[in-house]
Image 1 (cartoon, one colour):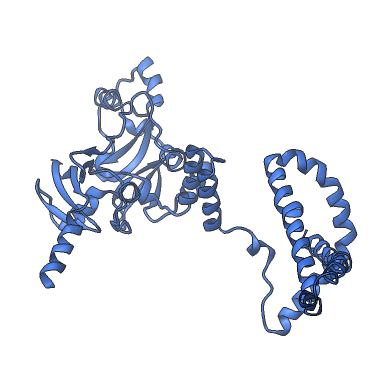
Image 2 (cartoon, one colour):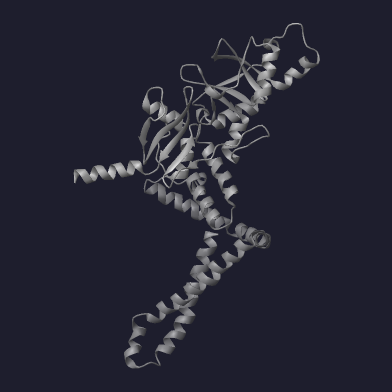
Length: 383
């Protein structure tokens, strides 16, 4: 295509010089003597090239491109055959030109750019998606899903897991009644099985595996007899690799380990899919708690809210390298068990602990401008 554009531009330039330039020169000769001097300084050629360039850009590039973008499939079918013929004809020339360009680059000590490096980078594709959404070509939901695909490759298991404090697990010595009670209360399909502590998960039980037992109850019930092997991954494992593990092992759940080998949480196939398509709720799930405003600058959020979500939604700059949830971040900054009323300043906001659930932060109030007001007051005092 570049060769065709170049040839067309050169041909039009020659046409402008020979045809329009001559006509403009003849016309300028009819003007008064003072204007005829323009012929000697090449005004006729410049005007001719300007006119042809305008016509070339408007009728040769912009207008055809707009029509083709409006009807891409139709014009692709029409133009593909002649373009294939043109490509076959000029292939020897393009090969020679490319070889010459590579030779010149090597003479000057430059490395030719591989073809795969000339395609769009992920950052460029993100810009294209954003522009397509702003232009109405992509729906907001489609753009969010594509953005989720890009972010998917940037996350690890620790960032998408369900933390250990929210794991519904079974003690290996649990009775059939205790097992059924937990299943009835939580309505999950898979349950980790642990021995002594949650840090020692030894297997996995599927709720459906209990159906044969309910039909013919054994004299002695044992979870060991029906539990399956459980897949474990480190918290640093990338979610792309976790997904590959699930596909290879035909599993839907893995235990996430911390750096000391203890249980950090669990990650499921649903967790991975939600990173791309958004929250997936079934008939037993409760809708996530939406941020509740208590004024123009005060927002109450759940402690389990992801830091990345808050940063994106409210324009905050809370660091999320070491923590996934805002509750975990506040806990880590305090360095002790939080109590109601504890305050932490981060980025351009102040976080106040509102509710505790045992050792877990249930909710926090965010003052979106308090931190900024404090810095402004401090600068005023210094002045």
